Length: 76
Image 1 (cartoon, helix red, strand yellow):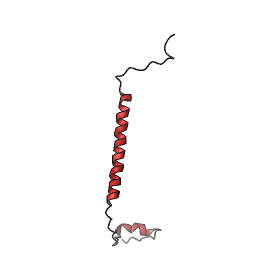
Image 2: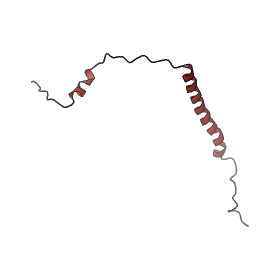
Image 3: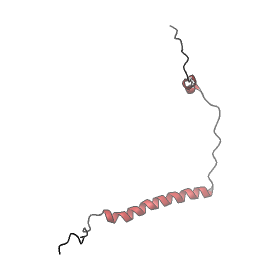
Image 4: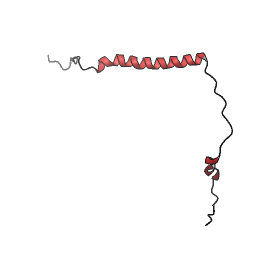
């Protein structure tokens, strides 16, 4: 049996998987020394910020220090 193909709108989308382009992307430029140094500095700054926040935040999260007494809860 022969199947009749109906014309569908946007038929080019159905044929897109068969299409192969012969256009190659341009070669990537190597990053300059300044750009590489900037990326390393940004990464180092982010890591240092995370480590610093962890170091400063750990004493507040520890449970081995006594809770401070407020003046409002104390009897007179």
